[in-house]
Image 1 (cartoon, rainbow, N blue to C red):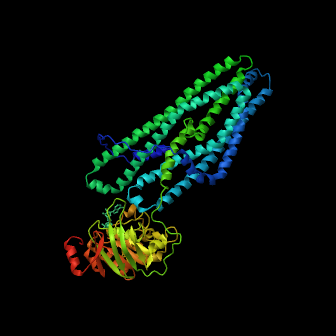
Image 2: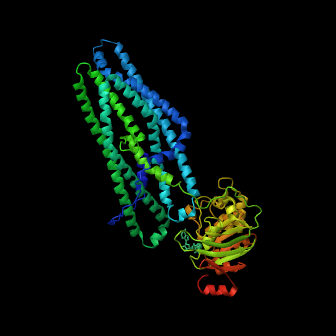
Image 3: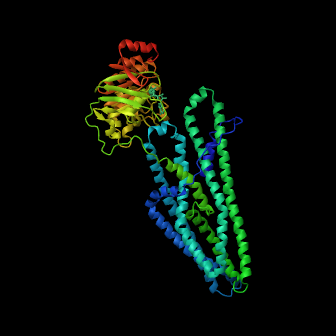
Length: 624
Ligand code: ADP
Ligand code: MG
């Protein structure tokens, strides 16, 4: 066991490594494009609704900073006296001075405790605010239109990276902000007061020198910000790639594509390496430049103080003055980065780095929440009550985007309550699209979809999707127990085990579930990986049944099944058709035979097929 968590993560990563490493020469990677527009103010603006509710820890943190600055302002003059006190103590001449030493010790201790508490409170506020942001961003992502996910904007890995790693950057930034606003102002005022008291003239000289230092680092800071954004993009690309390829590992191996994927990964990893290296180099550079300037200015001040007055300005004052200066630099670094954020006079130092690094993260995180949904619920939308289950597609036209071809072109179809209708047609003909329109994942370009003569655009989305169940082409199961997967609708409430078992029985799934090691409480693994295709399909049907919807869409729910599974699934479907309106999208002849009417969806329109006609469809390969 490694004691350090970072080291442990490292070990976890290394333990994933295979024994051999391939040596592939990566092709040059096309550099990623990014927007470099500075949006500091909008970033800060986005943050405040999350920071304000944390006023309590913030207030406590700031109170502690008051104590810490007060202690500091008592420490500084003592430091100037230190050589004298120590000198006198050596000779044991004045016992009174040792009290000064005790006082100094007490103030140092007070400052230490206050600083610690200040940081603890402010981190509490920053992390809580970030947690709220995460929750909010995820909630917003769930509200986004389907085209965000299907159009590639919602790459799972990229989103995951933004919500996990980048949100941590945001926490650092929020902390830097809170730590800057009040504590830095307090410390700045206290130190300026000290310096003015010691030497107004030297203080005026510092007022000229410090802005020069600030000016130099402004450029470096801007660069750091750009590099940070680039580094975030490359690592997000890496994470997106892994999220896509790892679930597809079976396919990769079967296609002998390990080497090719290895090369792709190497290219992404190297791109990330180069961006990360740039960032680290820049981060290493900035403090050194600050140090050089700082020492330069110290020498300058010493020279000035000697030149100004040799008589009235003694060594003790010099020590106090320089000490004040040391403690002055820190709040200036922090404040300049905050107050004059995007002007040429940008700040220097630690807080500045945090802010500049955090900005792209804030932008990218809040970018996820900035959208105008296309599928919106009307404010006066109603619930569906006493649903009979009549479905009417009325003159529907639809396309996926401005410059895309029409998928559906003036299509009409009326399904009576309780009726089963089959839809066949060439792949890419728009069958799944029709299903998506019925549960309002998209709105049609023109025409309406009606349920029980009610336009679905006037129905609350939650109510619509509760009454229309979908068993989709790509079965989605989650890692969790069988019962949780079937009773998914009630996952956050209480799953009704009776209903789960009833649904499983109708779906012909009860038998195989009982044979699992823990029955309904068996964990089925990620994406249901421990189940066969037929079992997954029956589980998906059971889940649709649990929902007790009146209308069911079965999108190729019987595709790719072995004959025994198919028989079981077909029996399940037959039972289900008894009291549901069913739109069955099918390849298989047997499934279609169960339907009263069969329609062919081709070229965006529907055509009803007679028995003879779908025999000919079979020969055209539209139905298996
Ligand atoms: P089917 O289910 O009949 O095989 P689909 O309804 O899935 O067909 O697709 C119909 C057409 O719409 C296809 O040409 C497909 O390429 C296109 N399409 C499907 N989904 C999207 C999407 N999210 N964005 C753009 N085009 C899409
Ligand atoms: Mg389809």
